[in-house]
Structures are given as structure tokens and as C-alpha cells.
Image 1: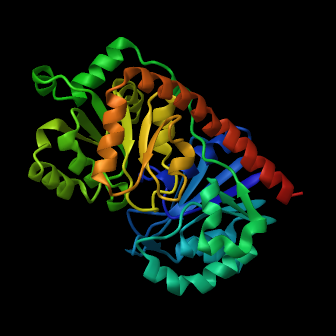
Image 2: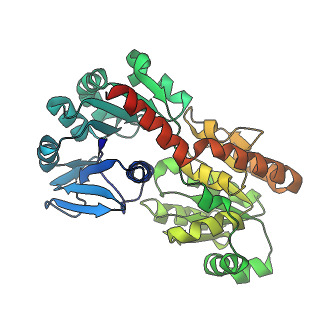
Length: 376
């Protein structure tokens, strides 16, 4: 099958949707399908074409970026010249969606509805009439978790919805890294002198440092938690949150690791005692980092956003789910788990079992089965 994915960005640009498109495209290519990804070029107006892990990646020239939306004339032009069997759109990216609605390439169109738009909601009001046309046009709409059915934008399209949870390669997180690897990553990541002076459990956060990740809530909770925090990731909130950490007196208990090598992530999960995703807004639609942590046998504390976060992490089974933007509730959940090693072990085992529902091969199987229903 000739498959085309359309979105705004692709790795090495970091992000949950970008990584999802990558693992799905590479999983499909690994099964012998011809897979192309059409995105925009983050570096300028030139259009480039490369082959990356058997996936053809076309980065159409970008003119500018407005409200996180790359503006491009080259993307619809490139789309017009392609001959896929199926086009897989990844929402939100209005230019890609409208281009496919107008040009109607391929035999069928699938749209993955990754999340509601929160911060740019005012702009979405202007786009909504076109979005309604796009949603009416596509043949199927993939959602990653059951709560997404309740999106106001999908209310009129329930018959088209297909639940296909996100998947990742679990093996690399499940396997216990060698002791030498754990020691190396620990020495590079943790302030050894501080930890030696005051031994403490390790909390882990992984993600882009954006407003909706809610790391400020965890920082405000940390004075009441006898633990050290490892923060993996970079982003626009790094400096404000570091300032907040100094203001509340916990800067000496946080290690800001930035963007660590991907190969070091499994060791970080296995070094930690607890994973925390304190997301504050429903822009956090799923939280695949939870799956990575759970695959490593790590219990999770997350927030209830009405999205997929609490679908992945089951309260009382694989960890705890607390209200967002509530430092007190976050403190209580973390303290409960840190105080009870047997409970952490029980939840960690349940988390590893639950992670099996989010395996990459299972996701690819389900997506390809959907394609097969639509393309005959």
C-alpha cells in the first residue's frame, strides 16, 4: 500500500505527535509498505526530500510560523503531485487538512484527532467552519483514548470514530539496563554530592517544558516531599520554572537535564522510584511518556484532565491520579507511594502489564486493518 502521512513537523523536531508519526510510519515501512511523510521545513523556504529508516520524508518550504502553525505554499503543491492509496492526516494542522480536503488525493482519507486545541482556541473559532468540512469529508477519525469521544468538535461524527490507542516500542524500556549503564547515566544525571549528603528517592519528569505540562505544580509541591527531582526536557518554560524552584527553596533538589540522548532514557526510568506527569491543561491528550515509564515497571502519578492521561495510568492500579494544578493533592499521592515500597512494587508490576496495551506492533496492526477496510 502507498501511504501518505501529513502533518506540520517531523523529528528531529521534538513532540508527541511528531514522534507518533515517526514510529507509525517506520512501523508501516517495516512491513513493506511505501510510506511518505509530508511536513514543513523548519529551517526555511527550501523543500527537501530524504529517506529516513525507509520512510520518504518531504519537508515542504516554510514561509513563516504563526500561532504554532507553519505557513507554506509548497505543501499543497507537493500534495497535489503525490499519488498515495491512502492519506493519513494528523490534527491539528489546518493547512494540511484543508489541502487534502480541496485536493482529495488517494482512495481514502483518515484523520488522527490527537487533541483539542486549547491555547489557540480563539483562532480555532475562525477555522471551525473549515474543520467541520474536513471532518465530514474524511472516511474515518482515529482517537487515542475513550475520553476523546467527548470532544465538542467530534460530537457530530461519532459514527466515524475508531479507538486505536497510541503505541511505542516497549522492549527498549522493559529490559533492565546493565549495571554499568545505570551507573554511567546516574553519574551524569544526579548531583552525587547532594544525594550523598542527603539520600532521597528519585522522582522523574520527562517532556517538553511547556505551560500545559504543569511542572510548576510539582515544583510547588516539592518542599513537602522528601525526594529529588530529575527533569528531562527543554522548552520555553525552563527559565521561569527554574526561577520558581529558587523562589520556593527547592533548586538544590532538582537536576535539570535538558534534552538527554534517547539511548539514556531507559536507564533514567529504571533509576527512578516514581514517575510524575503533573499536566495542567487538556493539551496533554495522552502522555506517552507514561507508557515508557510503565513499561520500565515504574508507578505513575498523573492528573485528571478528561483526556487519555487517566486512561493510560489507572488510579489505584498502576499509580495515582489527582486533580490538576493542586500541589496538595500531588504531595499526598507522591508521599503515599514513596512511603510504601510494597505498594510501589505492586503498582509497578501492574503498570508494566498495562503498558502491553500500548505496544507499537498492536497499534500498527489496528491502523493497517482500518486502512484495509477503506481501500479495496
